[in-house]
Picture 1 (tube, rainbow, N blue to C red):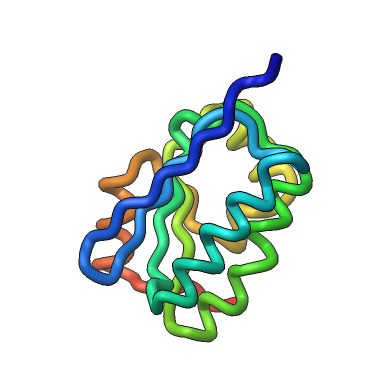
Picture 2: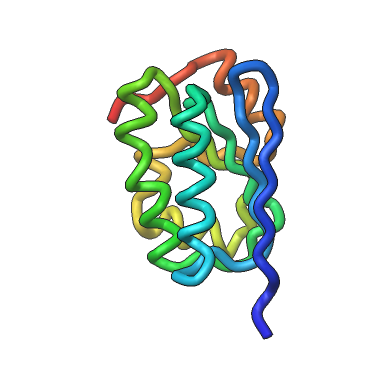
Length: 122
């Protein structure tokens, strides 16, 4: 049985920290998509996605990141991705996500990046 999928969100002022655990694939990507949409609708577009407990990501999961980044940046926000395990990080890098997203070691580094440099260009 695959790892269970757990998604938790905490908010700090105008910053959302979304923690993903388990597998982000075609079965669980819709839950992640719904949570991201809810954050945007609530006006929270500075988002850190903590992937320190993410053990697998499929193209469907990667697609969720890509489907929201432009809209979030149009609202002066960004998505910072933190804590990727080496195998998962390799997937992000092979597909060029490091050119689009800030991939940071941990949540603290991602939060600091928002303070230092709020957004990247699309």
